[in-house]
Length: 313
Image (cartoon, rainbow, N blue to C red):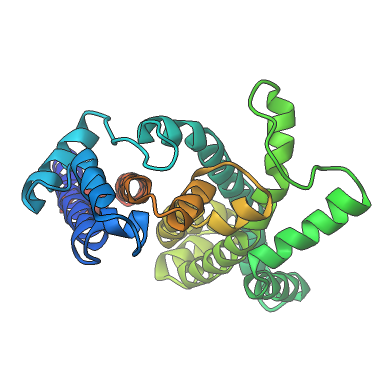
C-alpha cells in the first residue's frame, strides 16, 4: 500500500508541476505583455513600465516562474492588481464559501444517487428502473443555471422559503447553510443524475459476474448477494465519478455563484477576468488544479482500499 501511495503521489506531483508551467506560459508569456493587457491598449508607456516593475515582469521568464512557484510553496500569492490586497487573503475569504458549497452539493448528489442507482439495478426493467432512468435523463438534460433560476423563482420569489441570493456569513451557521441550499441543489442535480446512472450500470455488470451466480447458488438471496458481494466491487468506477464531480463542483461553480451572487472563488475568477487581474486568475487557477490533484490522489487511495489487487502494483 505504501509503495502504491508513493508512486501515485510522485505521478500527481509531476502533473502538478506541468500544470503550473502551462498556466504560467498561457497567462504571462503567450499573450504578450501582461501589464499592457491589464492597463489596456491605450495606456501610457510609462505607466505600463511602472506596473511591469511593480509586478516583477522585468525579470526573465524562468526567474519569474521560479519566484511564483516558490511563493506558492510559502503561501505567498502576490498582490492583487485590482483589490490592492494579497491574493492569499482573497482566496481564503472566498474559499470558505466555495468549499462548503461543493461539499454540500457532493453530499446531496451522493445521497440521491446511491439509493436511486441501487434500486434501479435491483429492479432492472421494472417501473422503478424506468422512473430512475427517466428522471436522471431529465436531470442531465437540464442546464444547472436554468434549474437554479427555476429554484429561485419557486422557492425564493413564490414561496419565500429561501433568499434569492447573497451570503450572510458564517456567524449564523444555520442561515449560512440555508443560503447555500438552493445553489447546492442546482449543482447537485446533474451530478446526481450522472452518478446514479453510473452506479446502476456498474452494479448491473457486477451482478452478472460468475462469483455472484456462485453466491446465489450457495443460497444467498438477491439482496444478500447485492449488498455483501456486488456493491463493493461496483464502487470502483463510482469513486472515479465522485472524484471528478468534486473537482467539477469546485472549479465549475462560476455560473451558479453568479446566479446567486455568492462571493466565492467562482465569482472571484469571473471578476478577475473581467478586470484583467491576471495575478488573481493565475493563482486561483493553480489552486483549483491543486484541489483536483489532491482529490485524484484521494480517489486513488480509495481504489486501493476497495480493490486490494491495486496495492501490489
